[in-house]
Image (tube, rainbow over all chains, first blue to last red; front, side, top):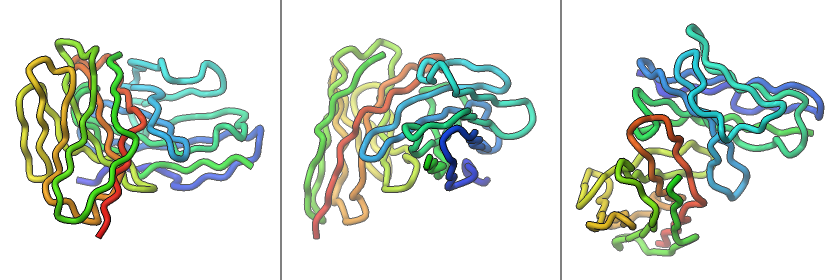
Length: 114
Length: 111
């Protein structure tokens, strides 16, 4: 059973461009979470999705950020018109049940905005 | 959301037992306590989870007093490879409240 897959592992964008981060949860997991981590800091929750539904997006910036988890395919975190402050590691996690269930994390996508 | 407080950093030597305590004064009745480990440039990895008293697995033990306002992660006989950041989280089982990662405890194990 493959673990959580994230791609790309590294993404470089110029200010104003769009960034698309993909996350394929573990097989059988219908709950996906996105976190952002700045250097030397803890993970900050962004959004929690369960197949086609956003359960909790309280940690997501109101503008430029969006997330989806379609019925088929990976979950996508989309950042429009990136700014330098968006540079961070973005981690995706999945679990078979709710938020308090063990979460399995992917290797992360490191976004660098030039 | 129940907030957690942990020491920022700890130092230890190989072979010693390490205890990391986490405070969560506002823990709710339905909340579980979970600990994760994170190595540099990697995603966090689940270590252990508990609700009350003591839980033990092949990696660690988790001690939770009766009032549940704190918990202690115990790592027996640490090695250099246990150098990592350890996060304490509290969250409920309903799945509708997101987990909150604090700043974690940076454990440095010396030879």
